[in-house]
Image 1 (cartoon, helix red, strand yellow):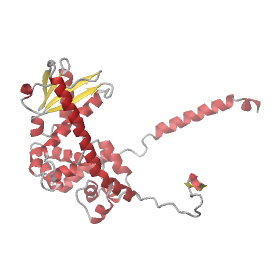
Image 2 (cartoon, helix red, strand yellow; image 1 turned 135 degrees about the vertical axis):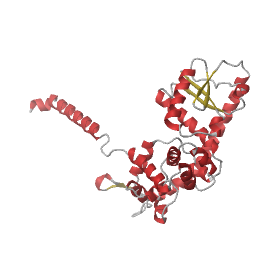
Image 3 (cartoon, helix red, strand yellow; image 1 turned 30 degrees about the vertical axis):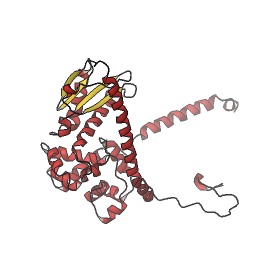
Image 4 (spheres, helix red, strand yellow; image 1 turned 135 degrees about the horizontal axis):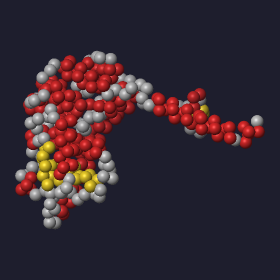
Length: 329
């Protein structure tokens, strides 16, 4: 092992003088490798979800043989929820908050209008609710059944409900359509997480987008862009397509979801522009504005770090003054 300046180290294999280590891959090559593995990751995720759904179905079949437990029905916006007795008020409050804050612009969803959410939030792991097919009128059941050990706060609960509603809405988009392929496995987006990804990226499209070049924003979203942007674009920020889609729906207002579904077999950008009822530049400028609003500040945490450092310095100085060597001196 040979140690160089700044703590770097180079390992040389014994018995092979002058052997050179392989050249490490560049950031672009690493990102290309990660992107190439995305289909395998999504397939593994799909298989895992299918296995989980199969186990849940078997569990439900087992529970269906037992006497049906009492349950209550409640509605929040267009969402129907079935829940154990005593938790209907909580279910209505949480689902209503999520609908009002995150999905009020998404009216007229066939998947959501046809869905029932089985909701539980218990201290012990709850058995899945058995919903009478007659009372559900044959509608699919989407389960939000959680323990307080894993989801201990109302914020965490709303996050899980938000994700369940988003997953249900995506059921309206035809599998294999250009819009579905572009969205991929996008979860409900976090503006802070997306902004941090773009702010920390050194790629040309990210820098251009933050500087106000809208074609750079299109490039990092995987929509379209100049050849140079397409060549240098890194993997998309996580869940950014979902963020842009929701932004288009908010701009489009009433009827935006229906317009989006009518254009889902066109290119994603065409579908989004049609849903938003604005031109491309306005849509991208609106998304970029949201990106900038959530961008982390450069000095985030510095005050806390400086304060902690000062406290440690004072503590060490105090211990030093109390030591024998200092007293003898």
